[in-house]
Image (tube, rainbow, N blue to C red; front, side, top):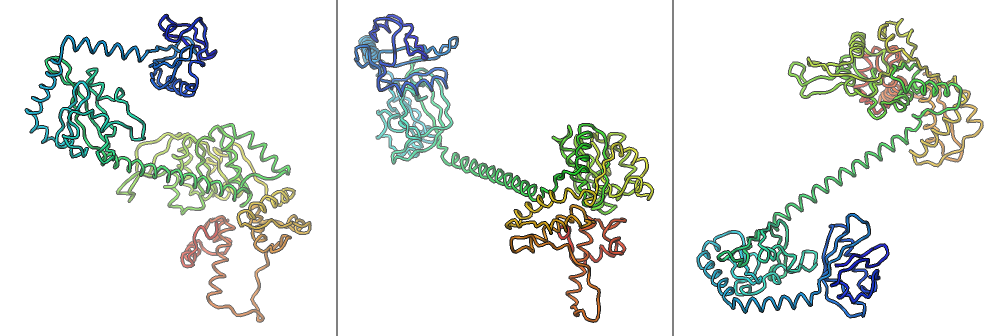
Length: 598
């Protein structure tokens, strides 16, 4: 036994046997010279000890202080109390072999061949008595004596292994069917569980190893090796094995299929992340951009209210960025880890808003096939953003107020109330007082929500921000359209600054996109639109198809201007001077979908 300090490469302690074996004159003594070219193998051995806690090997060549090679078995483990100290037990294999030979000679001298004959007789009797049963078994069965020699094997074992009884009986079966691992590494018999069964009286159940057929092909097996006795004397072991190659292949294919599904899921998640990033990049104008005093005031007010739980009412004309402000408030709040649930009240029919807001349960009376949570329930723990709140019917406004005040929401058709903890941010296109006076907004709901008003000024009131917005929108548009970025001349910028922008930033975005499409050279070609031509005797006659197309484009333009709202004072129907039902009918007839105006 010896103690090795790995930090100093010194044998710090050794008993007399170790001193004599290594011919150590004094301690401490360097150990690396004893390893010579085997040092790399010893380092690998240290890694194994570090992983397993302890290990042994006979593969490391060690020499004594005089350079004489030694055949050693090294068993080693780390000292748990002192880092860097390795305890080694060095077994002289030559001496061990001599002792084994002496012991074997003494045993043979005492017992002669009696024990061997008894074992042989035992297995012979066992084979005769049980041969019929063994051959009828579906599992492979074979026996080995205490020396590892094959004593019997049944028909199933012969068929699975391709070896005959004549090939295997009396021979070392480990060296014939169990000699290598599947990866090509040698499989020493002293590491084999079957070896431990007939040497150390241990039962082993192994679920995945390989036996090698006569034709050199491996078969995956699971087996049980059990020691057997003759009159309380260990006589050998019996091995029962089953070919699990087909099952293993099925499991492997299943694992590969699951891995493929996981890879596909990861790919879809990555694609989704990419698409989301692309959307974010393409809609980067949805960030609050500007250096004017009005924008700085908005940012200051967002910073003040975001950390609180106070309801916020955002007001402003269409296209001024109310959704942006709501997102900024949520992102800077303590609820940013949860969802921002957005409900655009003007985008749904009045009869559908109740379901959108409160949800429903599966009910035959309601004609619903599954449970569906509403936006209020989804916003629990997060933020609920209600855009165009004045488009919500007054009765639903009352129910919304009751839910927010009670802190609970009940789905349609359900009797059970669910907890509600949501911060509310609302947006209106007109001032709160004007909506209340017009009868479109309940006064009590307005008082509850209008804790912190936050107006968004129109673009015409912050013209100093137009150059920054143009620069940003131009970069985004050119990247999305894969166009080279044109130059914005002073004249073009002056026209943009002078324009009144009734559609605010949304209109500016459309103008920039149209200009990028029209630009063929290096300078941006600006088109702020032209008045609708008045029909006269000199105008060309248009076909019915052209007229229908013109009507369709006009409807789309109105929907885009109204942000998709059909009804209401600021809806597309009001802009066109049509009843909402007539507009809805024409939209259906002309095949206008949401993506046409979005």
